[in-house]
Length: 119
Image 1 (cartoon, one colour):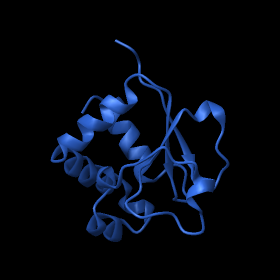
Image 2: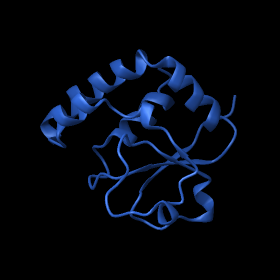
Image 3: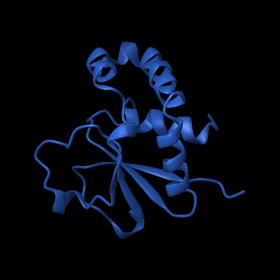
Image 4: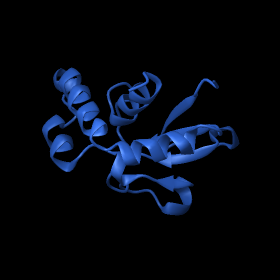
């Protein structure tokens, strides 16, 4: 079985050829970025955390462990979308594109860990 490799990149950084398929994993379009500049191949709004979970988290790092737990619970109930994403990333290089300024504590990190952890 092929080991998945999922890169992460802020949407505000320029796209590069080795990004592979660029998948925006945000529910809302990032502020101040045109669709042309973002160079997004696929936008999966449905895979992003719910509006209520995003608002609750509010990028408060002290809530990170609970955010990850709640987001994983949402993903567990959204297996149709998760399965579609798994198929999309199975055979190609992919980069999850996100808007958060914190490169360590954001939903793209949590999503990648979820997928690579075999949930």
